Amino acid sequence: MDAHRRRHRADGRPRRGGLQQHKLVSLWGIGELRPITASNDWLTIGAGATFTDIRQNAVIAKELPLLARAASWTGAIANQNRGTLGGNIVNASPAADSPPALLVYEAEIELVSAQGTRRMPYREFHLGYIRTALQPQELVMAVHLPRGRRLPVEYLRKVGTRNAMAISKVALAGVGAMQSGGVQTVRIAAASLCETPARLPATEAALLGQALTSGRIQAACKVLLQEVKPIDDIRSTASYRAQIAANLLEEFLEQMAASGQETRP
Amino acid sequence: MSAAEIQFPEIQFKVNGAERSVSVPPMKRLLDVLREDLELTGTKEGCGEGECGSCSVLLDGVLVNSCLVPVLQANDSEVLTVEGLAHNGALANIQQKILELGGAQCGICTPGMMLAAEFLLRKNPQPDLDAIREGLAGNLCRCTGYMRIIDAVKHSIQTPLSAVVHPPEDTVRKGA
Image (tube, rainbow over all chains, first blue to last red; front, side, top):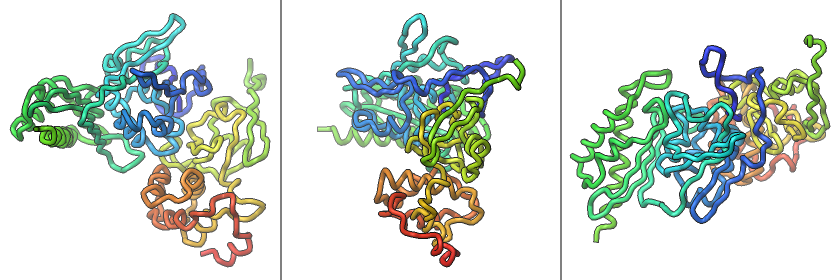
């Protein structure tokens, strides 16, 4: 359901679960929040667009496939029919399915209030565990994704207990390009490894310009394990998450290396 | 204002083809309005948090978990529950196949499973096994192991809700 609900209890703890008897305003009927529109440079997803809307959008399917895939892995069909992108982002679980794809695609987020709108890089939106840059009188208006910047390697994998209706133990998104045998561009983001959905700049920096030998890949995994902060919780353990995160990074980097082979003259 | 003086807004919607109207707190769950105010107890609560699918209904033709829909969001909408699958006393095809193939044991998941199957078949009249599994992935069953439910969906392909072929007498004789 819409998660643009007030998050604060009297003692400051986030509210959880159920349909609380507080003063709430339903955003469901606000038409301006729902559309997905494409301009030459941007694909704009209204905060009220559902995961089903995202899955059914032809531009997303073609140009932003990691986002379509993430939407298909969110809950199950009935959840996708009602759950919205804005809700997923503002609920701000570190395990949320959409953020890793949004982060590697370098999304921007637009916020609206009575004072007007503001727009920021989405990677600056999550401030800490379930804390975002959203001000009390603000709503998420839309998420904007740049078009025309597709990279040849795109990777997204979610590890959980089932094929559907699973909260991730770990998820990793990666996009990149090789040139002349080295990493030219790479962007990596993770769910369930930090207290927020997170880009992994240290891991990226360790890879830039590098040839992807198995030694280099192992070195990058070591940097990754320094950069992330997996925890023990109801779903998994820190050590399992660390191992899986390294496996996923390796899998992504092997795809990068293979793409480098294909483009060599 | 005392509790006795509170006037709840009226929610007007169509349920299984009939115009209904209830005066309830707007945040009351659609699930509870169906079960308590409209006495349509076919829709079940398994988890109350949108993870089991027992409460599945069609809202304006779209599969939703009714435990997560505040009834105010169903105003001016059309709701289809399990009670609305049969037509003029004749079972829908998915219901008949669930019966014939032993797709129900305790029955708690069954209404939600059938609504999910109905939604799937309306969108995709010829689903393969992967599509059936995906369509029902939001519906948990603790009894059957899912195989007979999936078989029932497979066997009900080609004749969704609109083409009912089984009058009630047959179901009593053929029932497992």
